[in-house]
Image (tube, rainbow, N blue to C red; front, side, top):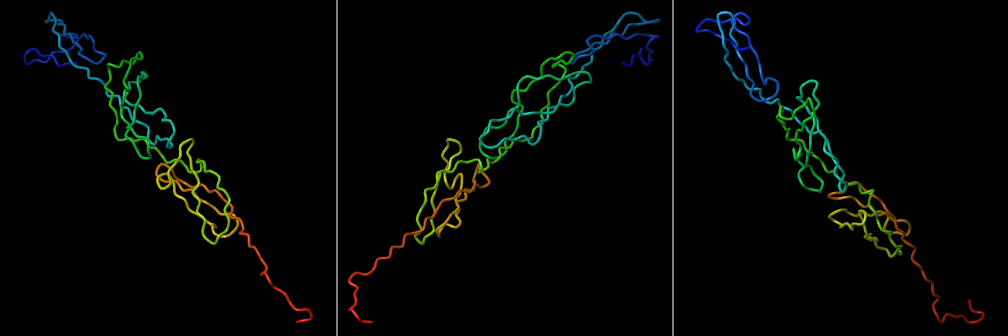
Amino acid sequence: EPEVKDGEALLTKGVDYTLAYADNTNAGTATVTVTGNGNYSGTQEKTFTINKAALTVIPEADQSKTYGATDPILTYAVTGAVDGETTAFTGTLVRAEGETVGTYAITQGGLALIDNAPFLAANYALVFTDGVTFAITAKNASTLTIAAIAPVTYDGTAHMPEPEVKDGDTLLTKGVNYALSYADNTNAGTATVTVTGLGNYSGTQDTTFTINKATATVTPDAGQNEVFGAA
């Protein structure tokens, strides 16, 4: 309700004038019409601006996937809608490119407002909250496939076989994707190989192999004899 004056005299609504409004709900330019009463006649129009309300989109925290998995749909919270209105969107949030272990910025991507009466997209300015990240976490080495290790024979040295290690159909690289360590791998019996994840992999997985006993052959010396009756 604007102040209305005749010179320095402040006029009274309902006595000297009435007010009428047009286009005064949705964002944009609204009109106030002042119509004279009593000692005043005629009309005068004034306009005012209805600014768009801020509608804030906040990506949910702690969104992630395990290395090698498919990305989930990124979720978010929304604040700022007028009571009684239900927001509606088209498009989705996106994250920075990359498929290795690490964190990636979540961005607005193609997310945009659409009408969902009485919610009107034109009445709102979408405000995206930056600074939230998406994480790719290491895949556990317990999910890897370790090829069987053929038995070996005791020879006095530490046996250190290097089995093939795969993630599904993908052949992994020692020193890049995993490391190998050994236990009980010298003497005959059951030896252990531990695969420890590196880079995009974490955790461990054990496999075993057999160290067979060596064959000790006893061969009597040739030409051994004794004289009958000798001690």
